[in-house]
Length: 352
Image (tube, rainbow, N blue to C red):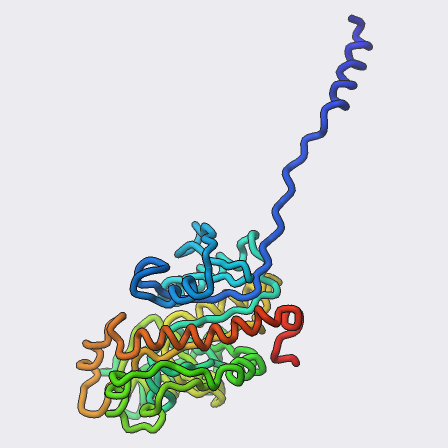
């Protein structure tokens, strides 16, 4: 066959074969609300619950989405509600929220974020089973410290700001992620929406709160606005409660009011802040709800060590009621967002 004819035939064959093209990429899954839980006791359903289980069972988060880069597989329902379990502590929460935020399978640009977990509570601010919406999230780990046996006599604490050489040194420097402020309007909207939600109470909870002298500690469970402190150390006692109150006031310039102590929220907020810089999320759409499973200090007549010894996960005096409160209050917000999605997709309720 002449060479010229060979090339003509080869060209015809090539043009007759459809050009190879990569399969179209799946569109990212639009997410309306991300529920952030921190720990689970066992399975996601059917046993003693942790912070995730009520959401899975009651909100029908039946779709399991593999999440190998994270602590636990994701859960989602047909309404656009996605749940993530971060694991305990700021390091795990930061890593998992960042992993989710960078996951190309999801469109999180319009998503609202609800952190819903249990906490210890300051008895001056709330009672067992109460639910606190935070406007300020303060870090309790970024600091310098001198052992209490070596602090100068004139110091109130041996815990110093990260850039400071004396306690509560001014001018204040909170540039390393020591404090985050949530959108005040959104927090107020969530509080007003939920302030009359009925929270579970019991004779056992009443007996546990009655020894505390503070009026708020003796109240039946209620919804409040109160700020949260995150630290990797589970601390306990009246003196550390005083430090936490001072620390929150210091890092918020006197605007914050310490109510609950938790272990993850500044890690979550750090990742969401960076993801917002990258255009992946809207950090103005974040809510932090902490519900009181235990007091952060003992009642009069009991030492901090004695009370800490009986303060164990799953055995807190209001463990199950606090989980119930987190779902009842949190789900009121979730359902409002989902049911009114056409109105809140582009404009937050705080803007109305």
